[in-house]
Image 1 (cartoon, rainbow, N blue to C red):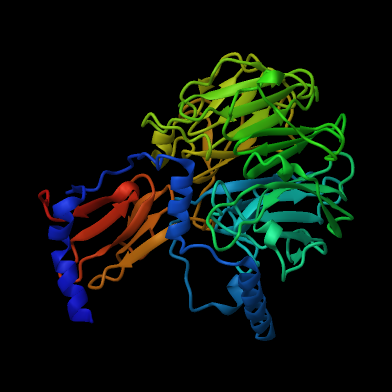
Image 2 (cartoon, rainbow, N blue to C red):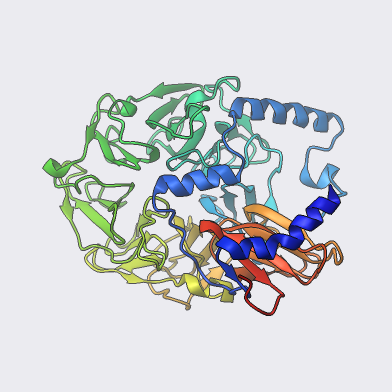
Length: 532
C-alpha cells in the first residue's frame, strides 16, 4: 500500500499538469474568489468538505455517551484529561466568528464563538481567551445571549445553514452559572431535533427575558436542501416552544429575527429569499414586496432597528446577480419602504461576483442615528443615515495585522457604549476585531485584531505533516487559505488565500509541497519551475 501511495505521489506533478491549473510558487496573502457561481454551490462545497450530512440526534447521543465516560474518569475538561495533546495553533489566525456577547455590567468580559470552534471567554476585552468546554454537544455556535439583569443566565444556539446545512447543531443550550455548564433547554427533545438542526439566530424578547425567538429549521437528512425555515417563540425560559408559522410563506432559509421594543408584537423574519413581517406576534405574516416599496425578488435580507426610534428600520438586501447591496429604509416600522443609495461593491470579493448571501450584517449606532455600519466583504460606514457609505476596513491588510479579515458576520457594541466610548467588536471569517471608536476608524487605522494563541477556531479542511521533518506542518482552512508552520506550530505563515483544501509534503522530497484551494486550483512549491 505504501509503495503504491508513493508511486502515485511521485506521478502527481505530471497528473496535475495534464489538466489542472498549477502554480510553481505560493502566492502569499492573496484573497481569492470564493463565489461558486451560486450560493448553493459554495454551501454544497462546504458540505462535501466536512463529509456530508449527519443526524444531530446521533451525534448528540454519541457525545453524551463520551461525556459521561469522561466525567466518570474526571476527564471532561480540556485541561483535565487530554494532557497528551498540545494545541499547535495557528496562534495568529482564527476561524469564522458569528457570535459575540459582552457582559452587561463588566465590559471587559466577552464571550465569542466560532462556527466550528466552540465557545471562548475573555476577561480582558479580548486580550486573551479561555475555551469554555471542548465537549459541548455542538461546537457550531451561532448566537450567544446574556441575561441583561441576571448575567449568570446565558443561552447559545447551535447549527449554521445558508442554503444547505453547512454545520448542523444540536439545539439551544442554557447555562445558569455564567457559562461554566450547559444543558439543552427543556422544550427540546435530544432524540428528535428535526426542526432545529440549524439555529441561525437567537434573541431575547425586548421586555420579557423569559421569552426568546429563534430563526431555525431542519433538513431532510437524505437531501442537502433545507426547504423552508421557521421563526420560533420559546417561552418559560426554555420550557416550551411554539412554531410561529412563517414557513407557510416559505421565503427560504431563516437567517435572522428581530422584534420591536416599542411594539413586541412586531416581528421581522429575515430569510435568504426575502423579509417577512408580523404585526400580531407571529399569528400571521406578510412578505415584503414591490407593493410595499421593497426590492423585488431580493436574496438574503438582514435588518437593523434604530434603537432610538423603533419605527425606523433598515434592511440590507442581497441583490442577486449584482455586486452591490441595496439598503431599504422604513419610517413606518416596516409597513412601507423606500430605497436608499446602493452600497457599491459591498458584496464583491474583487471578482465581480456577489457574496451577499453569505456575508451580510448591519448595525445602527444607539447614540447617534446618523451612523450606520454595514458589513459585506469589508465594513462600510455611513454618517448620513445610509445616503452615502465609505469603506472602513481593508481585508487585504489582515495578514499584516492592520485591518479585519474579509467576510463580516456580526457587529456588537461594548456594553458601556456611549457618546464618550464608541467601542465596537466585529466578527468575520478571520475571527474577532475591535475598534475603540467606530465613528472614526478607517482602513488600517484604529483596528485591533484580537486573535491570539488561545483562540483556536480555525476551520481546517485538511492538514499534512512533513514525514522527514515532523516540525513542519501545513493546513488548508476555510477562508484562511493554506497556512504553514516550520517550527512545530510556534509560528504560522499565510501562503495562499481563499479556501484551502487538501495539502501535504512529498514523501520522496520533503521540500516539495502540494496545496489546493477552491475551484480546483492546485499549487506546487519547491520545484523551481512551472509544472504542466
